[in-house]
Each structure stands twice: as C-alpha cells, then as structure tokens.
Amino acid sequence: MRLILVEDEEDLGAAIKQVLTYEAYVVDWFLDGTQAWQYLETGWTEYTLAIFDWMLPGVSGIELCKWLRDRHLTLPVLMLTAKDRMEEKIIGLDSGADDYLVKPFDMAELLARLRALQRRASYTGTTLTPQLQARRLQVGCLMLNYSTHELTRQYCDGEKQVFALTVKEFQLLEYFMRHPNQILSRDQIINQLWEIGAEPVSNVVAAQIRLLRRKLGEEDSESLIETIYGVGYRLKIQAADFC
Image (tube, rainbow, N blue to C red):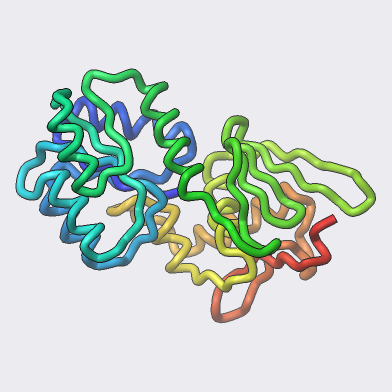
C-alpha cells in the first residue's frame, strides 16, 4: 500500500521510511508541507495512509489535515508532534487527524497505530469486495498476510498453497487485490508502486507480472492476472472463486 509521509526532521523521516519500506509500504516522503500540499492537489496518487508532522516548513500538518477534510477526503492521518498537552492533542484531532503520536516514539508503536488505522478504514460491501482484517487482506480465494508477506490461495477441493513473496510482488498483488476485476494500466501501476522520482525501465511492469505469474505457476493465458492487450492488466475474481 502507498503512504505519504511529511516530516522535516531528516534523520527521523529516513528512519520511518526505512521501517515502512521493510514492511512493504510504498512511501512518498516530503520534507516540506507546501510540496506535499501541491502534490496532494494533483490527485495523481491513491494513498492508503498519511503521516503528518505538526510543525512543518510552509504548510503545517494541521493545515494539511484541514485541507483533506474540507474536501471530504477520508484518508486516515496519523499526526506526529512533540506537543503533548491535552489542549494541543484536541486541536490536532479536531483538525481531522485520526490518531496522534508524541515524539519520541518507538517504531513498533508507530506500526501498530498504522495497522489500527488500516483496520478502521477497512473495506466492507459485497462478497467481491476486499476484506482487510487482522493484518490480512482477502478477496475470493486469495489471502495476503502482512506479517509474513505470504499469499495463501485456497482451492474448492480444500487444498491450500502458500507462496512467499518479495516486497515488490507483495505490493503488486496487493494493488490488484484492492481493485479486483478492474483494468489497471501500466501507468497506474507504476504510479502506485514506485516512489516519486523513481525512473523504472519501460518493461518493468510486464517483467514483474511475469515473475509473479511464474511464482504462482500460472504462465498461460488462463492466469489469474489477465493481460488486456493495449490497455493493462486485471485480477480476475468471480463469485465461483469463493469456496
């Protein structure tokens, strides 16, 4: 999943990004609140979570929260700050932040709070809607485990297969599972799975999908991930896949 981090303390920002990248997040890190604001305004990227520092050069974390909520955007926000007075916490939460973490903090607590925000924003709906529960994302016969970076695939005869995924394979499959039966273009996939400023080679998406299919033992035209020639790719999930 993709996360926007706005933190002007370089050492702290780099440490947070390193931990989150290890946890298979794609992280866009901004040192300046104004730059983050300008990028959010473009609407180019679909974020799952946001981490805003309160005090930032240019636009503050409070102002970023207010900007999101004024536009009725429900992106979950974790606010980081050295301010620990109750009145200041209330200001942060009233501005639109969903949770609050006082510096200094332990990275394990940061990850736990992000997981809690993910659960609160989990998907609900029909049987073809992705379900995020207890560090797992499930749609149809597929279940991703965020703790182990493994995919479990269940078949109608009761058999299960477990696949260990690389970070990029995990990110790619997660993106497909969050958009089942939707055609995703190469540009959409690159925009979601590669950080701002990254310049992946032209065939990187096709290569990653080929590697994922090979790992799943599906290299033919009946692959779970379907190629829509000239358009993009689609994860085929049907009601029959629910056993």
